[in-house]
Amino acid sequence: MLGDPVAPPPLNDLIRWMARRYVVPAGKAFARVVPPRVRVKVDEPVPLPVEPAPSLIPTYTGGTDLLAAIAGGSSGVWCVECLPGHDRSALIAELVAAAGRTSGGTALVAVPEVRYGSQVLDGLVGIFGEVARVDSAQTDGMRSKSMMRLGRGHGLGAGGRAVVLAPAKDLRLLVMDEEHHRSYKEDRAPRYDARRVAIERAALSKAVCVLMSSTPSVETGAAAARGDIGWVTPDRATRRAARPVVEFMEKDEARAVSHELHVRMRDVLAAGGRVALLAPARGYSRTIWCATCARSLRCPRCEAGLSLDGPPGGRTTDVRCRRCGLVAEGLHTCPNCGGTDFRWIGSGSQRLAEQLTRSFPRARVAYMDPSNVEDSAAEARDADIYVTTWIGTKAVFRPTVSLVGILDADALIRRPHFRATEQAYQAFAEMSDWVGPAADGGRLVIQGSEPGHYVIQAVTRGDYRFFLERELALREELNYPPFSELVRITSRVADPGVLERAAQASRAAGGTVLGPIAVYQGPTGRDAQQILVKCSDALLIADALRSLARDTPSGSGLAIDVDPR
DNA sequence: ACATTATAAATA
DNA sequence: ATTTATAATGTG
Image (cartoon, rainbow, N blue to C red):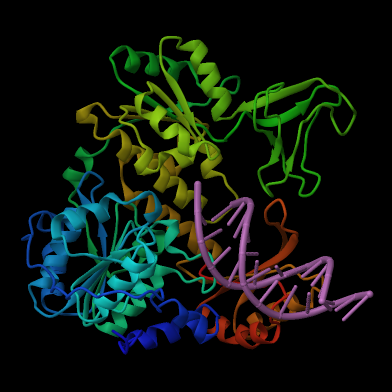
């Protein structure tokens, strides 16, 4: 039981690489591969399955090449641009079995968002039975068992982002499902990006790394388009057949739901269908405007607009800052002029649900937002109209609907972040997936003000490459990833010298420093300063920052985030 | 992302 | 020794 190495080669080298790239002491990195300390009996390892035989993968362009690469025991990275309608468990199972048929090897499968359960993970367990699960949904005992079992040569391991660190022997295949997902970035030290770690691990283990997504991240798509990694894609006709009807509707400034969309909803409801609406904000209203002094209320700390949680006069009348999370209780008078005549502009999910109850009196209306996720899940299932913010669009919460309305596409596309358009495209594509193909009555309505925007165009066409090309042109112009790598350094210290030194070290290592800018973290967190470093190789910056990180230990409030999202 | 807990640092 | 601030960790 004891004596099994926790990081057998070449995993030890991977952990060292991780410690280096993400600027943490080696011990911190190695701590991640130590199984939970519980006494367990380790099950006999079982080799990889040899079935199912490939049937879905060969229908993709490049699919047989990928299977050949896995079977041939070669090493390399592949992007599998999968069809939203395809069962990804089945797809992954075919790849895993291909590795199994070459004898002796093992495979690891990573999936995002394990905590609400994962259909893909359940699917794999259904197909293979013997899956060593190392996800956080398992008990410590189970995880420990699975890790040790993998260390002894068990064939298939699966779980969240941490599986890329699992001690699998003779790794042949490493699959990242939903490769574009944010949860592959670890949010605490070591702040590793599981995608990068997976690629590095595959290289060290001479394994095949498969990055699978129906909307690959821009970095992965760019590498595939450049020919640096393999590209497996569905053919054009299949892709087109999977699209819903996508309609763009001009946003009506006076109301959240335009007349046109209202008509669509009425038609769908009359036909016995269900509707989901995506509100741009939670709670009640997005902006609070004082009629006496003709100003909107701003956060005293960070100057961002404030929004209201509950209905005015209701039980919850907390005012919340969207940027820094500051919450002020019970708004009664305007802090500026003492006026009491407020106007509530822009509906949040809760007010929308209220309004819809009035305009569709016979429909059952349910809403979900970050504050009521748990108790509204059941209600949502029977609702005719389901109003939610982006949180309720997670696959596990989705009721079956035939119409999805995105009320404010601009809010998503226009966010001040270089990944805003990428994330908007992914979100819209996911909504397309939700309503399903046009042949089955699927319809997506996007309300916004820019029908010509390339994100809207790409979603309408269901064309990932159209999006990718235009996005890459912009990224190149501004030298953002994949044309550069990023390091984000945050400091909460009163003494600005720490951040200054970090900036100097970064410049000396060849980086370009942007900022500093002020950031606000959480209602209790204090103001901090942040810089962003663009460089050609984050390893160089990481090396340059290592001594600074070591010499300014606890209390410095210094956070170095390599490959931020 | 948030609250709780553990730990280190500062002060008396 | 006691208090206080901050980092680590667990949980929705």
